[in-house]
Length: 426
Ligand SMILES: [Zn+2]
Image (cartoon, rainbow, N blue to C red):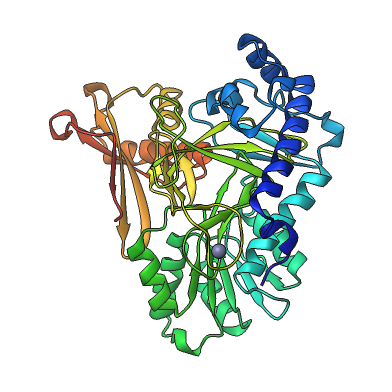
């Protein structure tokens, strides 16, 4: 099933012409309205009219997370604030969050692209879709929500957490599709088993996943455990949230909506553009974003473009499931956190000791601990003082990252050398 067959199966020459027209218009708007782009283009001696073909794209400078953080809060907006109807954020690496804006047109387009994906997975108005992504400043919940309503499905905005309640809802409300992170799908599966609910007795048919790396073994666990067809998706809370690319029923990669985005894969060290089948960093140029156009934005996500046509008939390129990140940003329970951010939060409390982040699974549950190497002056004789200190730090880390993390302290002698992030989830 396709929502917009005209665009989804557009012959490549026609699609590339459409991309060029939209690219030129995006470049003009960005150059005129966003000081950062004007400066970056001028520094490279480039004018929007110098871009005469898609191959000219490589003449344009990259946009980085650092560029966006420097523009905090609104300097990357290409429209006046009065035209912005929604504001979301993406966690910054150190100090500032990245603030993104959406016009009414952007929100409609976002819902439409996500709806294309949902329709492609077979979701119809007969479905009851439970959306277990976080609703808040991050984009996850909202991206799925508007699209599911557009398709006409019955939407349960379940949010994340309250797993026992969610398992009961799934059973009683006849949920036929769940939209969540792979990690949350595993937690739900665990809870269903704990509550003695046989997954075969549920109406659940599809798991629409996103926001985290989906490994083949986790995919298999969810498919078998929940008895569902799994569809992966790709999003970026900086670019637009979920709805950049989604898997079709051929289950052979995620189609990136090329009438809205130009994807490039680059070597993260040299910046050189790589071909299909070569693993590298995904770079995205938006073609229709009104409030927040991005030109050659380095997502930091590692993937590759799959070559060849898809059996579903769509002509848009496919991305392989993601392999990881170019930087040390980690995803914990679907939320991005950088060690730099954690360090900055601790430094604000006067703590600058050695630190490690330990991520692991307790059953299916993802857990993260920040392990601090304690100096002499941080040693506590009284256990009570120590406990209060760690609880205070846990609260600060949660408030500053949106992720619940434990804080543990170890004496100087017990602190092991090696990488800062110890990820034992796989
Ligand atoms: Zn396909």
